[in-house]
Amino acid sequence: MSDDNQWGDYQSCRRPGNVETSSIGLRLKTLIATDCAHKWSTGYIASKAKYSYGFFEATMKIADIKGMNNAFWITTEDHMESGDHFEIDVSEVQYPSYDHIGLQQYPAKGNKNLKHSGMGWGAKFVDDLSSGLHDYGVPWTPMEMIFEIDGEPVAAVVTNNAVHGPTDIAFSSALIYAGVPEHPEGHDMVAKSLRVFALR
Image (tube, rainbow, N blue to C red; front, side):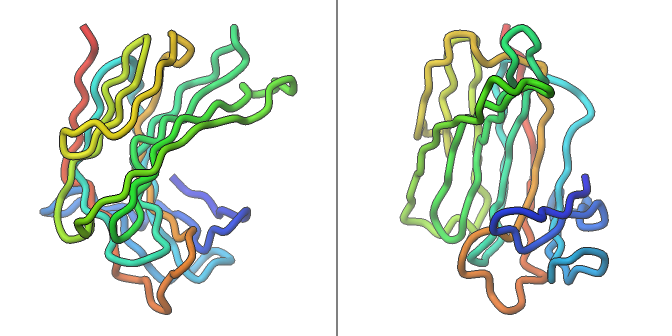
């Protein structure tokens, strides 16, 4: 995926050339930008396949710098009957030890009657999450979502069948928060594996 992020606090564009496969998994590289208004570029990849209820879990190693949003998320298609779609932020991890989890509702294309709304939770840890691999996941059923890190539940929401597929799966990195170092290039996010199990 490619975007220029010309809004908010973004300090990086995202380009396909920053996405690579490697012996340790999917790497979203942080590079000096060559074709956008920002100083740096990062990576963003989304699945072509669509999914529905089930268990989604990724094993990731976040970038070891402040300012980076290391994200694993899924976005539903527009629901024309309800006029909305949802973004499920399984994890938006920030170095060294914070994970933001969220559920956001957006208006479907052309729906001017619905405003963007959302909820989120923060999980703080003692460990430096960039020092190794960690699992970030969500079991998503018609009635609820339970967000987990390394197999332990950290947040939950009752959805009452308001959030349903089809959805894609995305990984992205972006320099968006305070504290970006002078030279963030070379500090990359890695997704080692992705597991998706359909709800029976």
